Amino acid sequence: MSDLWIDTRIVYEPGRKLAYAYNRAMEDTSAEWVLFIDHDVYLCCNPYWYTMSLDAVRKVQGEKVGWITAKTNRIGCKAQLHAVGEDSDDLNHHIAIAQQVYKQKGDALHRVNGGNFSGFFILTNKTAWKAVGGFRHMDKGLSAIDVDYCRRLRREGFSLYVMSGLYMYHYYKKRKKWLYNQFKNG
Image (cartoon, rainbow, N blue to C red; front, side):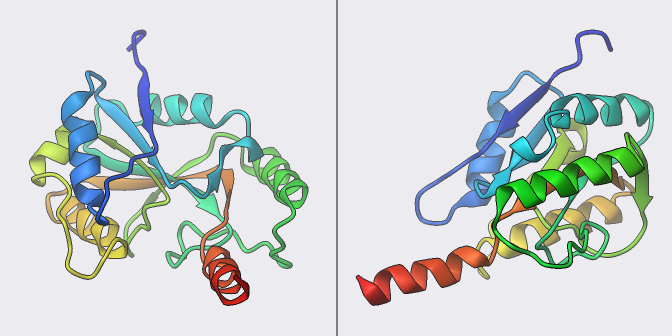
């Protein structure tokens, strides 16, 4: 595994065709592991994110793993949520949280047996992706793609993990209020 690398992508496809963009990225890469990150996730909170991701992949080598994720401030999945108290949009505040979480948890990796992961940070692999038939477009919009993928991974016997020491600030949901105010005042 010395030549291990993770293809890291922030994908986009017009017309809210996120599943298509995910699948195209999986088809186009020569890497076994691909990390999909939402456009509103701040990687700068923990500069070790890539190394931690590589370490996580190495730890699960030989296991049937479909998805590895991180912790964040705003998300529906409790296994991925790190409660931050006052959830401001001050990036320095979130960098300090990320440092504290990393100091407490380090490179800890925990298997999650229930619940549906949210797709802000999807570290997945081609083996799992092929086994479940890739990502599927959902008529419910962008948010259901991740839940569907998670459920199909579990159904096929793939494990899901959380890197407990990796915290990312997620601007999620705040942008809706900001966009509304931009257009309203516009």
